[in-house]
Amino acid sequence: MRPKLPASWAWCALSAAAIALPLWVGAPRTAIAQNKNQNKSSSARQVSKCVKYSQETTDDGVDIRLDSSCEMDLDCSVSWVLRCEGAKASKHRASAFPLLAGTAGAVSASSADCGDAGWAIRKVRWSCKAQ
Image (cartoon, rainbow, N blue to C red; front, top):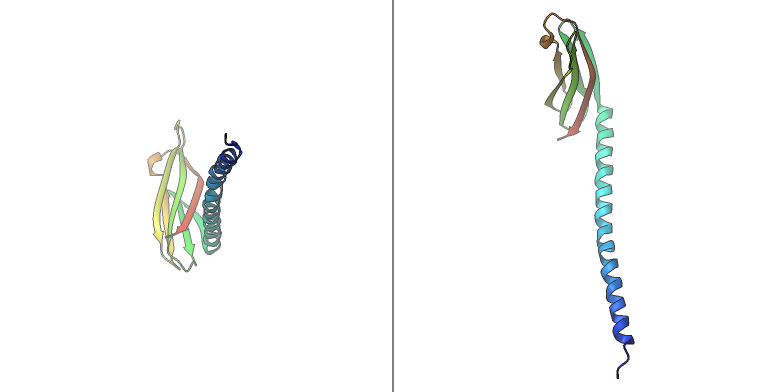
């Protein structure tokens, strides 16, 4: 009769390998994903340093301007909330546009939907990312 020890040992070794292999193979993917997230946040910080936001209130809304001193072309978006006096709900608006390296882009957040009623434009948000 053969002892069962060698077969049991082999089974344990295979089981350990089956558990460890997916963990080892998954580690590089996790590192790659973390590296991509770091690159995205680094890129966002870089863009925030070379894009300047400004706005000017006019009679019929708000003019929003993004000035780029970046060395790369960007895809930018601006969003805002328009609230008309007497209206029950606010209106969310957005605009997206390319911003070429070293140029300016502007968006007009219009109050035309409010007619002659009073209005407010709030929660203006902007973002740009490298193309």
